[in-house]
Length: 246
Image (cartoon, rainbow, N blue to C red; front, side, top):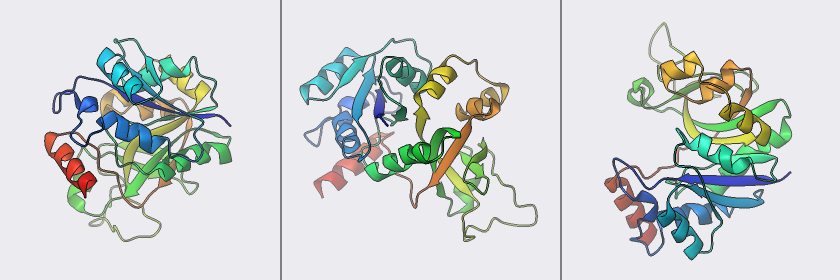
């Protein structure tokens, strides 16, 4: 199967302006992400998708593949769908452009899920919760799965609710899972979803993946030990630079 990793990258960011072009390590932040993606064993192409000429030029400068997209996309998913429409690919992986520490093996886990199970239209990742504070925080999205590790529901609410007490985070296999916002799609699934209006559940929770579930699209969930720390704030970037310099 042909597997393309597409990295949406925007210049504007409220908390960290010009984030993809930060370069204190000697490499652009988007370059770090791109180079990690090229370490994927299964990927046949890695492409940055952007609507900004400065990011386009930077990717070209370090020798990466980049596509210009429209500037009116509501989400990164719509941006990668525009790129996927012209790709010769069976599976499209959406990797955020602010994930320089993402493990390439986890990208392969995503793609392999779709290779192994033809009933799935999408795949994503999750990691076990380890404390009640994070589990109750609406900024941490939760996912509940069936016995085949297919998603039953995603929510900002603490699910599954433990009626008779506090959740047991030590249960094995883990029951309380934090969803991680990286996805693999079958190309046709991605293109169809981008043309489908938002579902009321999606609008209520502000979670795009609920559009897929509401339309009966199977989402496989791979469980990995730890979340990867992204770069959302100046403090996050400073921590990444310090770690990179060793």
